[in-house]
Image 1 (tube, rainbow, N blue to C red):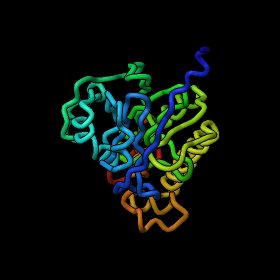
Image 2 (image 1 turned 60 degrees about the vertical axis):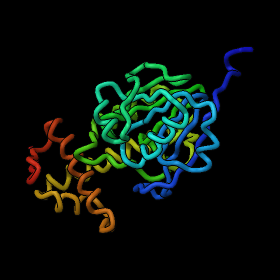
Image 3 (image 1 turned 90 degrees about the horizontal axis):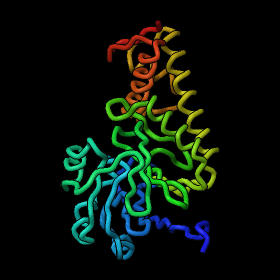
Length: 256
């Protein structure tokens, strides 16, 4: 049979989680023998894991890891972590990884793509049915890239790497499958660059503190998500510092 017909099914199971995503769910995926992002235990996921031999995560944020210990034990599975992030993985999951991966490693039928930015340990998994993208992309809205965990420069680079691959489909960590990957990636890049422009304009116009820059950078009511908006603006300020456009000491910003 020609290779083109040997498609690997990507089975998504939505797991209720305490997440910022508007859906209130995190997508776990079963791809052949690999379970990705078991965010918690559910009856539907229990039924889907027959034959699972590997457990892996796109990243170790709390809304992606709740079922790792259970399914690793129940499936007697090999547990994988990002190389160099083993301690972070164990702190998040309570499970010591059996093996590690890095760019290009194969886990079952999947190939690892390093995609930091949303989180420092973030990866995606390439299949012959597209890419399991974790929190790199969403069909609607945007992805939080917050100071402390997030790196806007790395995030934009990761998006551009996926764009260059031109996948047939993106399978995100939250919400529905993305059937127009390049259009969605362009939208997410444009959103980030527009936010950066607003942040830079705010600083050039005299905003100095993080709250004042945030107020100027958003043209909508952000009271319900104020903390995350400020962390997002701080992440953009960190990028602008690296690129020489802004001086920022964590308290005060000024244009250079």
